[in-house]
Length: 462
Image (cartoon, rainbow, N blue to C red; front, side, top):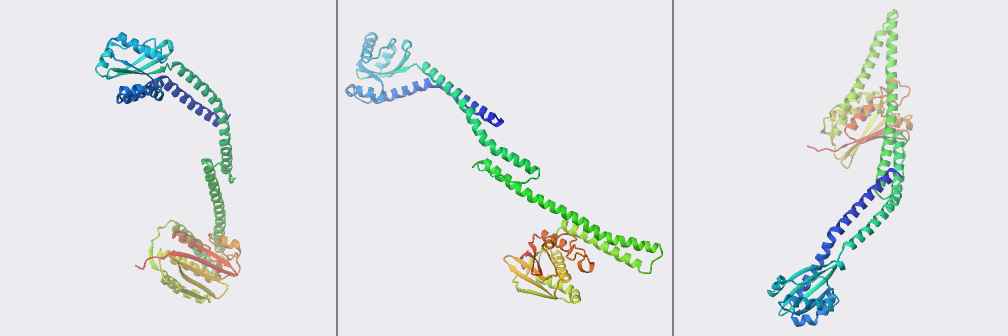
């Protein structure tokens, strides 16, 4: 038997023992008193009814009252002599089949009857294992004796308690069987859940199909949801680890090349091979490394910096960014078309300087990678948000590029030509800023076109 079966057995067995003990105590100590109380109430009710009727009426209906209340009623003329009175009452009772070994109306009771009081007595008949409960009252010159036989309950109670003991013993064996059946039904899904939890702890994410219609089914559903979420978190962590490995590889590549050149040109200077350009090359590579470190620090700072949220005119900010990039636009011989025909509310809420960085990076990337001369920008109000979209042609772009485009040091130009690709940190910076703004953003790429978008919550004009 399993631990759960034993636990169920002993708990149910204890409950049965407690119920049996309470039943034993109630039957032994309270049941006799309750039976006597009920019979006294019955006699009191009958006595109260008879006291309001006439003697003639009571004598005529005596048999009916005996049948209705299941009592014995006798009546006789009231006399003060106790011997005569007791002989007459015993004779009348005997005539109705009630033979009492002990019955005597005392002189004090006769005096009470003489003064109109009701007398209550209980006469024990030990040899007959009964008692006779009597109510005696006087009405005019007639006394009425109303009696009810009460069987001694000791033997009956012992029989009931013995029967309850047999029931308790039978219930013990029944409990053992039920505990085994119930435990099997409960343990089977619990064991399955335990195995599932063990698999999850070993990173084997799976779900169970348990239909019990109770809390175990709810627990199974919770574990299934936990398994799904842990699997997603595990995959996300694996992806982040892969991204971290790629990040380390990329940053090593970014730093290794200028360091190698600096070392080579330094050796050339030491060997007096300098033609006058070695120092300028070293300065240039040092600047590139310094800029790369600055961008990395900037990226880390953006992740922890407190943003100053305010309301500002997005359209005006975009125009300012385009004005600052006018020289670069002309140099790359590009045409930027801005469609704001569906923009009705240009005010947004955000950190204006950070959003400037986002716009600058998106437009700069478009200038670098656009395969055609035209770049399209649209500003649209959708509900309570302003949506920014920038679209341009692209030479080559596969699905894997789209999935990794937000990663640090990822560049579309796999040759990593600095004049074309840059450091690969721009879009990573953009993503950090937009995440801090809780701004939905993304990328669409199809038909040799790439489109970036993000949206900001519309703010107040004030």
